[in-house]
Amino acid sequence: MKSNPIIYLFLFLLLFSTSCKEKTEVLDSDPIEKYFPLAVGKYITYRLDSTVFLPFGTSSVIRSYQVKYVNEAEIIDNIGRKAFRIIRYIRKDSGQSWQADATYMALNDGKRAEFVENNLRFIKLSLPIRQSWSWKGNAYIDTYSLYTDLDYLDGWEYQFDSVGQPATVGGINFSETVVVKQRDEVLGDTSDPRSYAEINLGIEKYAAGIGLIYRKFYHSEYQPNDGGYYTDDSYGVEYTIIDHN
Image 1 (cartoon, rainbow, N blue to C red):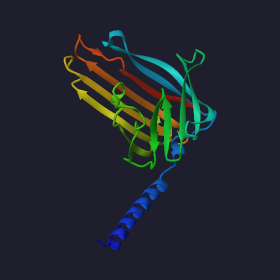
Image 2 (tube, one colour):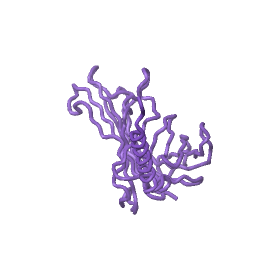
Image 3 (cartoon, rainbow, N blue to C red):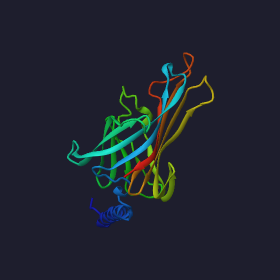
Image 4 (tube, rainbow, N blue to C red):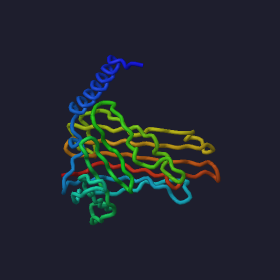
């Protein structure tokens, strides 16, 4: 059978036009570093409201702190990319001294921003930065193996919203921000103590030239058996910016 050169030409033009479109979309986008700036010495301080489920999982409390994320040093990650080591400092309030309590890693490879927390790699931002653009933000996380307890993170579709819009967070005005909607999910009947229920919520906001200014994450899984209880992996955090350099 003879091949048809017209078909090959059509396929070539289709692939070429698709590639050009993708490159144009990226070029038209703001760069990742606009909303995810990384430099040694940069810091952001937040109010942290942490939702903690009490022993036996029947109720929860909110405990508040101040935390400061400091870009401590430039490093190289395990595949040779430039990254930054970030140290988190914590205190109960401004009357106490800062104490280092956690280490993270962040990087920008030009196409996406990654953040490594508790050995979990999240894709926080991804080009192009435009309204409704979406990506699999938890793609590097094991959500499917037999013994994982992170199955609730599976399939999260991160999506940009309110791109370039002004916002006020923590009493601070920001001229350009972007919202990243990660998840807003309710499974089961949360009002019925006899029914299984699960809540998954994730949203973040970034400001131009500053970085993350707000984050809310919440996961709870309620089991109705044995009198009803929340599982051990249920927790929530809310970060609101209060200072930065």
